Image 1 (cartoon, rainbow, N blue to C red):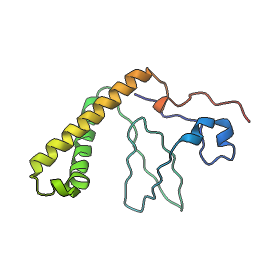
Image 2: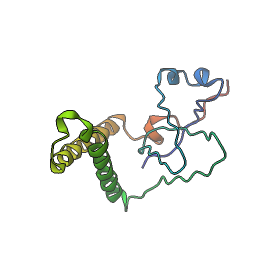
Image 3: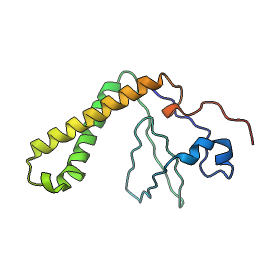
Length: 140
């Protein structure tokens, strides 16, 4: 699997001096309310800040023994979410039976998985999520 690591702190005052490439990134910001969950797929760099006193529970692991099962479950859950929350809301698909929506969603997730695997193999093995650096840069 990919290691979880990055020395980049997006809130650091010298972030753009230490990590100039980060200036070109596009952050996606979300506020997660009590009882809600946010999922960051493996390999997606993420940064979390608590806006209030809170308890955060994070589960972020798997092994070679459960890798395929985990991928199957996550792909299935993603296909379901795409079907319910995206495809069913499209005017041209609203009247389609669930079987058609599920087929489109499943094919979409399969294409995403195929693209992810191809891009990952192009990058080569990396010891850090998304190819982010594994060594701390020199202090500014």
